[in-house]
Amino acid sequence: MVLAGAGAKLTLVAGSKDALAQTVRECRELGAEVGEVNARPSSEEACESIVKDAVRRFSRVDILVVASGKNDVAKIIEMTPDRFKDVMDANVTQSWLMARAAGKQMLSQGEGGKVILMSSARGILGHPAGYTAYCASKSAVDGITKALGCEWGETGITVNAIAPTVFRSPLTAWMFDDTERARDVRNGFLTRVPKGRLGEPSDLAGPLLFLASAASDFYTGHILYADGGYTAG
Image (cartoon, rainbow, N blue to C red; front, side):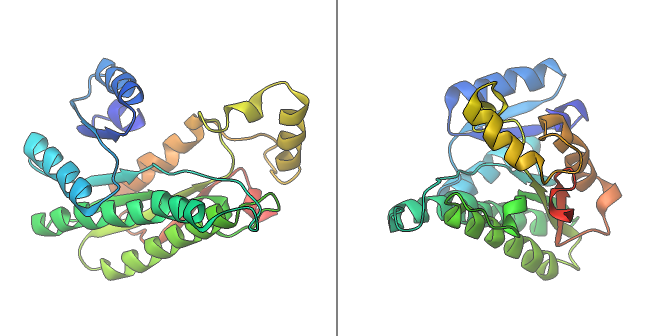
């Protein structure tokens, strides 16, 4: 939504038709030109097709934002290798594939570009509640960000990641409820957040605009922590 409000032309991609349609409507209400692709970036072919759709519609690709992913909470002895692989595929492989597909287009244009991945404070912090898959996946996203930032350093393409702590989303909405379990989990996090609250979607707007704009042209391979000070304590 923040990019739509800033005047960007968007190709929105999601596996859920309903969620995609709602986001498209909201972006168009802000006056944005919007294309839509009902797909998941789960293969090389799918990612190449997504990029081709954007180029067909808007002639070029200047910004890539990869915000898809998943978590699967389980103690390591209870988690199957297939479940671990699913998290790694969703968070790491799909980010790598989309960066590869969009990067090829940006390189062919020869005018630079912006690649923005979604990491997490869990990329550098562990968690006692069964986060081996998630933490490993976000550490890998950080690694991709840093390595690709170096690889594309002289091309004009910047590669950065936003790393929030817990913020309100469909997956975490229960943590904001007024139930005993939600309060216990929420308070556990809040003891480590100097700002004294969990994140809201609006807290990601500034970092996204910064990394998508010329203001961040000298930033690459950078992990920007949108965490209320969580990783500082």
